[in-house]
Image (cartoon, rainbow, N blue to C red):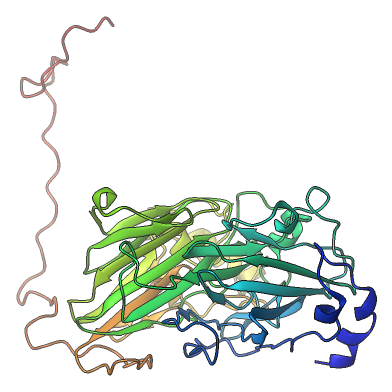
Length: 457
């Protein structure tokens, strides 16, 4: 990036609240990232120590210490996000990516965040869930002026409580958030906390939704509910990295939802407890074991568990169409319909025509159907036993006994011990299903069915 652009007009930059001209005289570096891989945790080079998080298919924003203040530089700008190999989407984000980089601080830190606007319209940044001075809350027109294109504003406050938070615009939200403007914020405890356990692996990601028509590259920002691309940190399976842990690790997963609907996030093979929300740590007496937690719009959920079972365990949204990948909502259901005669006639006029869904949708992932450029196929994931028939909000928790502490590399597919994989029963195929019993010819109620009593009809 051209640093001269940042210095131009810096002396007249408008601050969100009173900040000295000395602080504005030289902006911190605007670090950027283009890789879609999960970056290694950023060990704090200075300031208070903490155990860093790992942002799924993302990274943590570096800072500089200016006296006792931790300074960051966010750049709101247009970006291109590769959501899966071969599928790139025009988005708006921060510092080269959508979502923007994770911001990590420690409880009690004084933070100063410079925000440079390189978008074609004004913006702001709201620090979702933070306790801070009202003028730093980032609601355009209410608590501050909007940040015009080409200008830099600065926010400054103390990170007063530990927890899991987000940041996003409070300006033209329908457009800016639909285009991917969001980021994660983690405030670590400054000392041992009775409600915050020490963990060996700490992951975080945001839930996102986009409406990208086949063959296009820019989301439709006027969509309210009928999104077709559901993502973890703006990546879709099979482009989402796995969460790789050592057996016996205590694992924390932090999930934030900035879509337009709720997401029941489900983990296979383990039970967890919800140990925190964006409101703070959950008291121990209010926790209970779960395998699914619903993350509503605008909420954060922090879950923890002991990774006690080896294997490749699915982690996904339990709304089944959110793990399909892009699909046409107007496609009619044709299960059980014999298309053969009509399909042949249509193919004479339209050679690329294909029968869709006459036996179910599973075959769609394996079809070599011609697609427009930059179009993500449905259910494109592959596993060691064949098509995974998954897309969108789906990834894997990979638990291995030989995964080294601090090693986040993908260990590959799990090697199942002999006799532990479901397999075909040898011999003849299963007998045909029997038909239900014929009801009595008289039309009288079946004696085995009890008629409800006490109700007028």
